[in-house]
Image 1 (cartoon, rainbow, N blue to C red):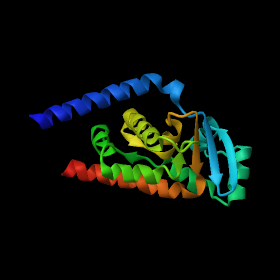
Image 2: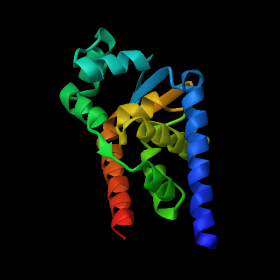
Image 3: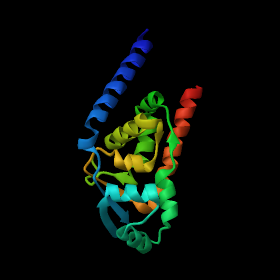
Image 4: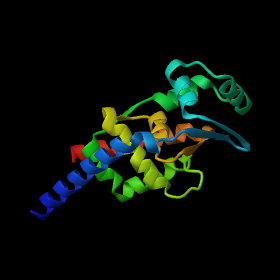
Length: 178
């Protein structure tokens, strides 16, 4: 009986949190992205990065950024857009486990807040919001739904973050199949 109550309580908390996040999204979504490539840093709007992801067209600043960093825009776009399917209820369970803390810590080395404070919490929020929209999560959604005004991204490690999202998906599948 206690386990059923905890499951119901967790589901209600998840639904309530998702509802609050959805109501407050416009006020708490990232507006600026700082792309880091070693010593090279470039600040751009989330809209500019989103346009690149949606259309494949590079703005002048992104073209220069990728050229200076010797990054292939097609590869970057693939890592940003490739979705990972997740079940929101099981995502909540994994997000509150030790396994997830490891995954969140590794993703937060690539996508993080400027102060490096509350990176796990920001990622959790972005993941839940992204998953609640369509049952999928992508790196661009995590960036867009980050609850801080500005989010920093280590451009050279986007592949690492994408692999961690895949690990999260595997953890969720294992939980569902258990």
